[in-house]
Structure formats: C-alpha cells, structure tokens
Length: 263
Image (cartoon, rainbow, N blue to C red; front, side, top):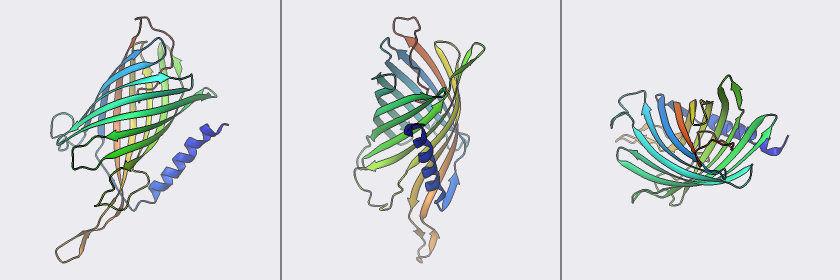
C-alpha cells in the first residue's frame, strides 16, 4: 500500500489525539446546511461552479436575521493537470449579522484509486479580508477523503468519508490571546452522493465540526475566578444537503472526472 493511502489514517489519529487532550467541551445545537450548486463542465475536463449556501440552527433564537444565521455565495474554477492532479481557485462571500467577509482560496488536489476506492487529498490556503481594525488571517486546510461509486438500478451512488483539519495563519499576532492551539478546526463528513441523472446530483450528509481555542480566565471585582480559562472544544453537529445542477459545454453529456459536491 502506498504512503498516500496510509497518511490520512495517521493524520486522523494524530488530530483525534490532539482533541482528546482538551480540558472542556461544549456542543452547539444541530445546524442545517442546504446548498444549491450550478456547474459547467468543459470539454477539456475543467469546470466552473457557483453555489448559494445557507446555515440555519435548530435553535430558533440563533436565527435572528431570517431563515439562516449565515449566508454564503461561492464560485470557483478547477483545472486538471492530469488524471490525478488538479489546481483551482475559489472565492467565498460570507454574510452574517454585523460581519461580511471575502475569502479567496487557492487549492491543490490529488486523487488515486486503490481496490476500487478513490483516495483524495486536498491542500488549500484561504485568506480572510476583514474590515480594520480586525487582524488579518489566513487559513491553511488539509483534507483527506475516500469514496467509491457504484450503480443501483438507474441511480449512481457514491458513499464518501472526508476529514479535514485547518490552522489559522495569523499575520498580525493577537494581543489578547498569546496562546494558540496547533489545530483550530476539524471537520468529519459522511455523505452519500446520489446521481439522479447526468445533470442532477443530490448529496445528503452529516458533518461534525470541532473548533479548538484557548480562553482566558474571568475574574470578579474581588479578584476571584468566575470562569476558569484553558483549552476549549466547541462541537457543532451539522445535517446538510447539496443539490447540484450540471451543464455541459456543447450541451451533450460526456465522460469526465466528477468531483464530490464538497468542492
């Protein structure tokens, strides 16, 4: 077995061990993440894509600004260097009450088959444009996934498991939080892609997002600790659904490397 098929397992074990050392853990209410995508597949194998994404909490008190507490508009282009390698550039506009972010991203992706299973790795670097005086941040993220495609009747199914870990690259060191966690966020996603036709894909999934941070102790007027500081893990369970519509250059469908709806 090649190293790139073993490395994802080692990485997952390392990060899960990192999480286990945390002192305290809290869990958010379950979030709902629907997304609608439009993809244009080119004859060269490359593709453009656009998406609208919403995030809603099952706790209605969090959805203060309408049906969703956060909105995303996304788009990107991916170019295939070979059957195994591709590069891409994406951009995401994120809106929530009081905050608007523009986040461009560059990525490098690799995929390979072993025993009928496709293993993939995705390395990306994202930069957050924030209004001053907020500090500038970049996010480096590494994702591993594995999936297998097969048909059941007229449907093409693709069960997939993906894990990624991200670390914030702080260009301006924070004054209020000198201690930082090595990993700032992880996501574990399990999905089943359902290809209804050449033009329509439906992908329900479950995701577990973990955010890692360090808090400072809080004191009352007498100098007594009211809230102890230290390592914190914030867990957010997510139920999501991606709906993708695919258009083909030249109108007629053709064979290509079809990537998951999790771009």
